[in-house]
Length: 389
Ligand code: PLP
Image (cartoon, helix red, strand yellow):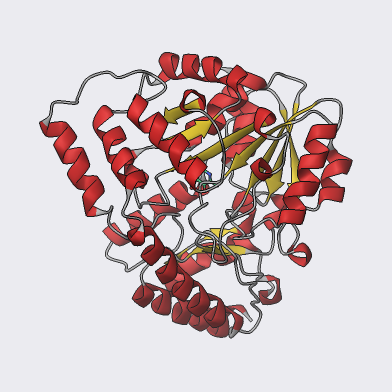
């Protein structure tokens, strides 16, 4: 069968490939510690599960409006207002099956061949993949360790051309765990306004910032009308399998994105949306507890990594990933990640899974239990001292 040419431009997400390999090893009787997948190991909060069960018992199993049930769109708008994150109306909120479709729909709606999309590198692999798929040219914006893996506004300004259509930001950041500062978002917003860019701010890890609320370009006057906000329930409430996310769109994008929903998935299941309302209504102490537990794990993991000769790791300010520099081990990071899986039973991702700038790094997810982290650290240490150096 001859596939459409565009399929050769659509990439994939290595985390799922490594997960597949790790599961195959487990099926063959090997023990594997999973540090590859970005998924909280906590259960979904019981009050969310109860709300879904109630909705199912009430027979809420039919089609609902494509952009989402009104109660949830209102709850999202009220939540964002109460946290001081955005002042959008409920009509600007579109509920999507996970956060990923916000990326897909935004780029399908905006990008054409010849357009350019600037995205962070290292960054979530879907940014470049989807941009490429639309025919636009993905333009990597390097995030450098010497700048704490934050966007350098001067470097950004140098990449903007007359063809730049969209700028993607992500803070707290996957895979580096970096968080943009107020000065960063102000400088970036100035460039976006001057050069008339649309900005997509991916804030899926918004609840996982370890030093208070994360600055956003949406804090800057004049940005709301050119910014798409992506967030959702996957990471915040340990609800990855619910497939629930949302976009807050400038008014001109709401109808096109709703049409993309109609043409693809119709709507997100109503019972899940009722669970999402319950999650936003709270209690939120489960989210705070999860973040505090991740903070403890982060400190233990980073500390442990920094004790291994040849590895150095910055302390991430958000999300649940450590991004250690492993250049001192003298092995390509892809080879190291592969050997860690096959020889030490530790599944993690090479930095290059997130772009060329990730060369020389690994991504380890610490959304995994403390015991597993200890086991992983000693397996890494063991492999490094035994085989690598
Ligand atoms: N954006 C980033 C930066 C992510 O890391 C992820 C998931 O890993 C997503 C978006 C997508 O989240 P969801 O599972 O809700 O589609």
